[in-house]
Image 1 (cartoon, rainbow, N blue to C red):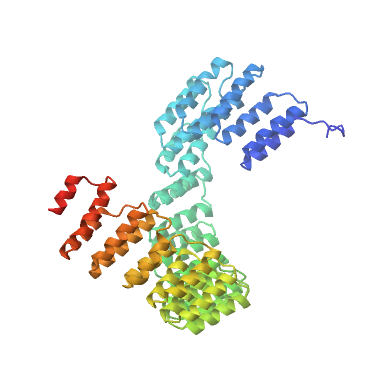
Image 2: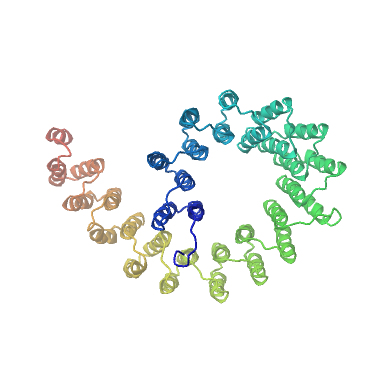
Length: 576
């Protein structure tokens, strides 16, 4: 730009810094300062204020304070904008006392605070519901700053309090403002109405609406809809209907949001058919249902178990040019599957897909899972193939559901082929996949085949606890021989998880009445620098003594003594 003789102003750098700051790129924003110095521009007040603003926005208040000190060193006097940025920074960090201290110090530094200085602190106090301190600050603003509260002051207080759910406090300030001759418009009143409705105090909100009429402030459709929705949320549908009539009576035409709120209330009250009838009269009432309206009705029918009506609503929705989300489609598919209507669920999903809806892999997986639960594995496998034809690629959850269903039916070979297909497709097995494979292979005593398959799975996604799971599962099925053979693989790492697995094997041997084998496992643990559970070993020792294996019992306790886990006196007490 310098070569082209284009003048570079500091304002341009300020704009770039603010843009970076809004994008959350604090380092880039501060780097602009370096570029400015390279361009030969000297720091001015505007650039310093921008730097402080950026630092405050990035929660770097201490750096902002250091920047203020540097400003003073180079002879740049801070102005009210500088201090307001720092006040905002203190409030963001909940250091309101420090913010007030800045306001107190400003006049002594030759810079009087303005209303923004006070408003910033008031906003924070309103969020914290510290109304008394807000009033004290208003008095301070009048007394020390010579600034009188105006319409903007009260509007700001009312809106901030309402935003954080403090309707009563907002109403107090509104009354105070009106006593001082200020007049609020429907926006201020509507904020209080919304706050009361959110808090479930709809009757109070309605009183405010009536008060608006008496003061010549006509409520708009947004205000009415807030009250109507409030009644619906409380289940007071008769009151909500009366509010709709009240709107017509006073010349306020309800819009789609108003009717949708009432439909939502009817649906939640179990009156979806009435909601359907109301939507059928939409043309007569001069309102047009939107995607949310159809979604509300569909969910209402679904909750009531009227799945045919729910599907019809979705079809009508699509005809009108609105598309249900994959989540909404899935909820309806789940409901159909719970009723064992898998074929209907499949047809519904395919119809949505053909009409351009965003059907995803989760929707297919839900139907496949439904078929698996119904033991219709051929239909599930067929749908799995259809997924690829529809360019919807199955994920690990889809394959795991199918593998589990095949294992449940004893079709281990088919499950293995599907697992290999999954790996060949580049899909990483999940922990659930590992648990599923391990469960069914162990149940069928196909340990060698399982180990070969696990090695293939490890190439895609390693599972450090896979062998531990195999051993524990074998023990649960009473196959201690294969579990003992695998124990060597587990003890290579000698971790806490491995110790837990060994304890499972030991406990299994005890339950089976083979304490000597449990003793051998404990010895193998000691050899790998793992300390067995002492209470479990006490049980092993007692069982060994009962069977006449006192030498092994003594040796096990001596191992604990050698490791400093128990004293000799404790050992003698156990032996006695």
